[in-house]
Length: 117
Image (cartoon, rainbow, N blue to C red; front, side, top):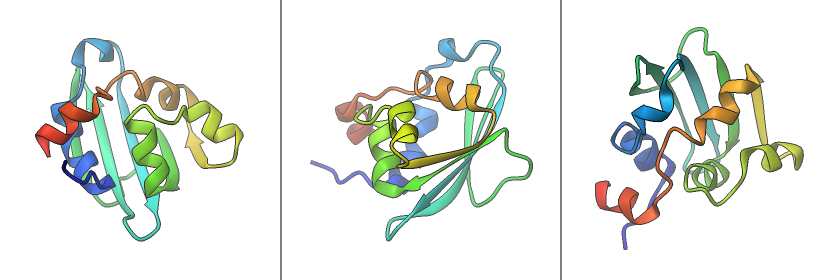
């Protein structure tokens, strides 16, 4: 079994991107993962494609700020982002609409993700 870190997960997102779910979605998303496995990444969703870059991006439509562990849980479908927000586990800045849409844009199949890492 491969250990999934937030960095490995973010880098594989373009491969598990579900383009048909991204019709009419254009978003620049800043991910800020805190903690020992943390980092910052930009996710760009344009014309049903997904691109990831490391570091801060200019003018994100929204930012997701949470511990690396909670970000992993969100992208693996183990933690509902709205529930995590209500519990104070994550912070959103910007367009909340995009934050709610993001979970439908990526496969949460852990075995598929592990196979791609």
